[in-house]
Image 1 (cartoon, one colour):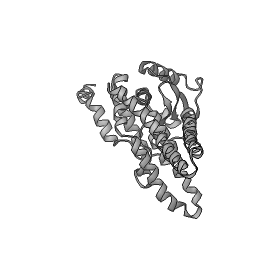
Image 2 (image 1 turned 135 degrees about the vertical axis):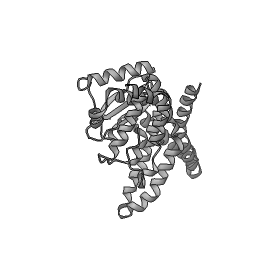
Image 3 (image 1 turned 90 degrees about the horizontal axis):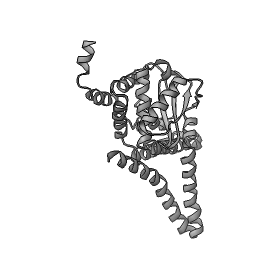
Image 4 (image 1 turned 60 degrees about the vertical axis):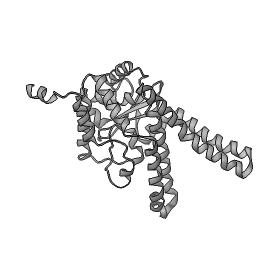
Length: 281
């Protein structure tokens, strides 16, 4: 039941993201020039929503600088994603690769029925063990299953657009960013809850048969933050498995992930005897 509620909740969020602005603009148009301008304003918002719905995965992959990963380039990875997707009950996402050393994964798109993209950095593919990579894939597929991916992709694209709009300020860009940054962050936090990551971690542990693959992957991603420099728009933070940005300045505003320590602790608690097993090994 909780899974079905999560799906319904995420679909409603996606509708609200565009329904509220459309209604507000339609009301404004009605006040200015009657029903014709109301239809124009409201229809424009829904047209934008339709474009984002159908092309969200491509737009998001462009924002993170990813290119499509062909099956011949990584056959084992494609096979693993397709196998886990079949066990999850979702359509396997199209795979992309980001050619840089910072280990990370990002998910974007519509949902479990298709139109989604999963990107891995070459840095992640180079350092993650098979169990860690399987845990990350299962975590991201959990977001497809519950339709978390739809609202988090839409709000990320809108937040990036709002933040980038500060560039029109020219010499006053910093002043614009001081206003638009918190506005974009408030929209992100209004629609995205950190609980979605905890639920995805739990599902990944169940799907993989062990919580330690995803737990070890989270620790590896955290370690990378202090070794490899990473620069991108902090508004894309909801797309990643963990927050890759420094928790300061503009980056702190967009942090929608729980503390990594909390996530790892919850995962280890799913196997209370893991310390004893480690000593025995």
